[in-house]
Amino acid sequence: MLLALPALLAVGLLRHTAALYQIPKGFYGIASIFLLLALQALARIKSIEQLRYVAPGEWGNLLGLDRIPEVRTLRQKLEILCQEVGRAMRWNTELAKEWIAGQCENEMIFYVDGHVRVYHGDLTPLPHHYVARQRLCLRATTDYWINAMDGQPFVFVNKEVDPGLLATLRNDLVPWLETNAPVSDELQQRMRDDPRQHRFTLVFDREAYSPEFFAEMKLRRIAILSYHKYPGEDWPVEEFAACSVRLASGEEVTMKLAERGTMLSNHLWVREVRKLSEGGHQTSILSTHYQADYTLLAVSMFARWSQENFYKYMRQNYGLDRLAEYGTEPVPDPIQAVNPAWRRLDSEIRAQGEKRRRQLALFGALELSGLAEQEVDDYQRKKGQLQEAIEDLDRQIQQLKAQRKQTPHHIPVKELPESDRFSRLLTERKHFIDTIKLIAYRAETSMASLLRDKLSRADDARALLRQIYDTEVDLIPDLENKTLTVRLHHLTQAAHDEAVRYLCDQLNATATIFPDTELRLVYQLGASQIP
Image (tube, rainbow, N blue to C red; front, side):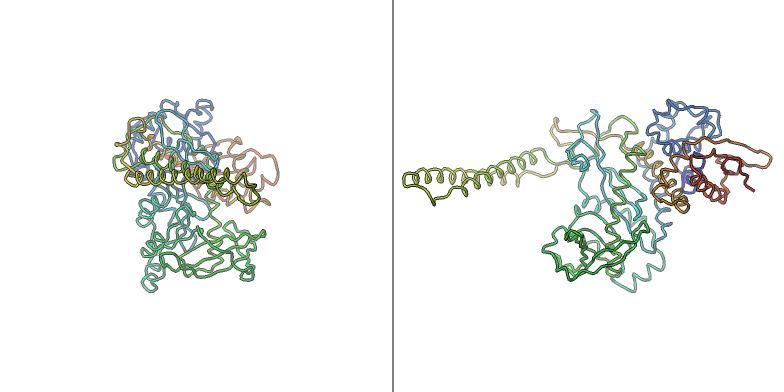
């Protein structure tokens, strides 16, 4: 686990703790608590309660102590750290600003999407959300994330009442990016010289398709990149050309692409790029990014799956959906929910509409041709009955629509009927723990990028790291020379040993000092000596 310490510190685990967090003086300092939580995440210990079943002395050695705190003590420390609502978001914001500024790309591209976090408890009847991975409507909350092209996370906001991706973009995420995304002097000059130059690019799914929103973002000097929700007819196959493109992972592939200019319903002129699959399907994307090559737009759009892969990896390896504490609190007054009366009327309109479609199908199925003379009267009677039933359903639907129009679609949560009222889950500790998981994920990603240089299969990097985290080490402190040697035992393959030696060389070059000591960390594999 200590091989991850340089990466954790470089990502920012302890960089802002002194400014934002304090705990009373005691045996376990704030650095030990933060380090324990980060190492716990990397070890795939998905809840604090699971620390009951680890060796406290062995884990204490990782912190330079005789043992780790008991679960009860750790809970008390977390309660102190998470007393102030919103502090975890400020910590996440400070870290995200540094992560965004450290991006290698010349142009900032942000991926935005929602992740539904299912709630299986019974403390409060949370609203239902559609969970795509389970194809069910379940009680849940929604987290909206901002990620980089390679899937690395920056920040997220939690919505106990999901207003939708479009509303969250407009009200929460875009203002956050405008406030915290840095603008270089060079970019400011380009924006002054070219009215089409944007500040950054937003990539999102067709759920937030809105020509009005696209135009609004263009006025705010923000480029958008999204799927076309209404692409219309297919383009001629002759327009597509085979293009060699480099994906975000570095892999080079060939895509058949074509581009046109498209006028949207609000007369906004955008770029439309289509990809032709081998099966003949055309995927259409839209963008107000007017400078980039259309191949780059295609690569950027299809890299959106890195965010979906991030959610899956975090759920499986870091327990992203797991609760951090039990309890609820009142929903803030400004938050509105769907009016139950409106929902019932809307549901009844849908049901009556389905009945009308069935009656219309029966009406159209009755044919006069081929009937005997004695069957004509029966045909006319059935036709008349169906016509009468359809007209009656039309009147009912119109009345229901009139009632729905007069009923408010959304009302404040406090005005909900008692049977439909709900509270929200406590959010501060969850945001705090999830921020530490983001740090752990970013640290693991940086280590994986080093290992990929020495592995024949790049996809094995994270699996190898999980093996490293679970491998025993010898800790050899040298107080005279002020070093702490971490000697890793040999792994199962010579190829993996070679990759780990390379990783140790890179980690030694950082000359990392163990927190709250003067000991420089020295890494080696087996009995090999590091000069």
